[in-house]
Image (cartoon, rainbow, N blue to C red; front, side, top):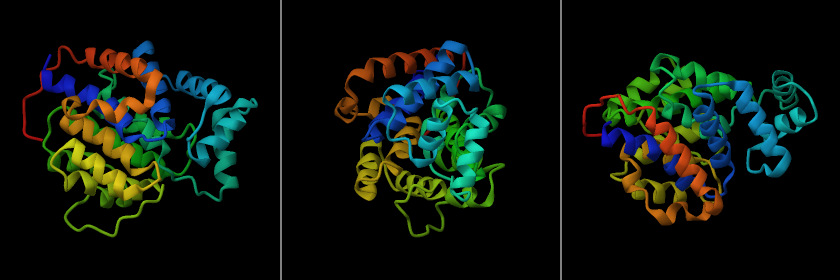
Length: 274
């Protein structure tokens, strides 16, 4: 198994942990990763059950859309109905970045083919977020992470991630004509900011520091910089101090990252300059 590939697969989840300064996105991503590892692939019902169990016990920092949906599901409302009700109640303003944050482990799962990855991310996003842009952003993130972890050079990976995406997400993946960046939680804004910071940075620590400075107290952009940057540069560049604030869940993070990486043991990936 390619050392570079393993390093980058693991880097996706550890990078996400580095970027997540509060903890909710990592915990949701961890639930996705553990489901993928234990079930051998994507089972949306199982992921949804894990979300609700976590929400009932100590869920936090999900963003307003997921919080409202999970609260309804915890009361017995089916996921699809809950997501539609929340979308209607919020006037369709459900294009937040939570799905793009939590779905990164889909890219780590060898059981999900490249051709099925975007659709998997969109369906996972729809558990809570009915606005198409939430799913489109999640699809772009997982496809970008998958390309980078395979060693695809950064500009090529961006083009691959843009294939099949809507105009607003394709625009967010462009770096040739940068627009004013916003620290909001609107999924295309978060993706655009993360892409531009990663494009302007030569290493994971530099990108992470820039994203945290840009975001301030908002826990949006750094999470995507972490997962995408981890796929680009690998766990070797992720400094231990940057994940220590997650405390007792770090053994779970490391264990499931290794478990998902093991699924790539027979995959040959050429070494390339990313």
